[in-house]
Length: 495
Image (cartoon, rainbow, N blue to C red; front, side, top):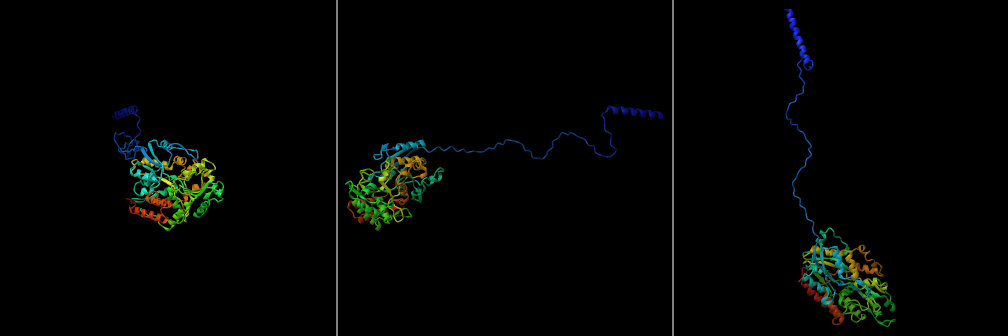
């Protein structure tokens, strides 16, 4: 029995040994304790793990983009009224220099702005019924042009015929004030606004006094002082009226332009302390011709006519022979650049015979007509943007300012630094100081310069010099006509 049990046990051990050898090796079982079994189990499943993941992507955002089209430059026709330019190239009879015609100005502008058709209406200054004043009135009433060379800008602005340029200036990023203080001379009252910019300075000039140094020498009279007085002019004019002691020619001591008496008379009156009046808060004017100071001026001028040559009353220019050897007048007031600048430059030495001094000055150190005529834009203009381009170029470019100088002798109105290289001749003149500085000493611009009060006074002065009115009667007549005209004004607009 024990033997069979032993044999069975041995057989079982043998079988177990065989099984172990055939199977994969298995680690020995741990000690008999209650411990978890650590193992790797692959289980198919989806696990949500909270996390921030940076994922490169293209986002499509829908939006509306407004693309403004490029604004076309101003174009079209712009009509411009100018005064006193040569219609065509012409030869100056005194200097022999060729003066460029108005077509040269047009060509220069259109080269710079080919999209604008500049049409220039060029007119002589004229006198009387055909003077620039009546012409301008007719043309602006008929709405003939967009841009005007307009000495009477303050009056036309006051009456509502012009565009206030302040808006153009404010909205123009390219605008530059190249005129300095002269720009403010063209601010004035207008309907609904007491302060408007009515124009841009265009042509410059001055009103100076000339004297013939040779005649002074012939008569043995001391030259005029740089700032002459009324007494000095009267005394020296009287000495040089008569037969020239060296040549035997008839000489005259004094000159006046009969058809443009007003400016000479205002300089005389201002030197005696006269004041024409003022602009009222509503834009109307208070004008006083019939005052003691104006009476003294009228009496002085009436006395001086005895020293002037025959024909002075009918004249609207300088005396015959001016700037030549045939000149017979010693003291010649109211010289304008158009008469003398180009001859002085083209004929060396001429400015040494015909000298230039300042105009008469009043107690305030000012005197003489302010000369810097402006360009204006008509309220009726139907092409204002292009007209603004034209105005800026004509008034502010070196090319235009040089053309005015070459064509008619107008002094530049823009900053001297801009034109000194283009016109170097000016600074070399004998009396350059008085010529270039006179406008800085001039009276402020007269707002009535192209209005009826001026012409009423002019007619009265002509009658006085003709001997049909006394000085007192002349001023009384001018004052009455002026008062009647002023009564027609209503809040700054003549009716």
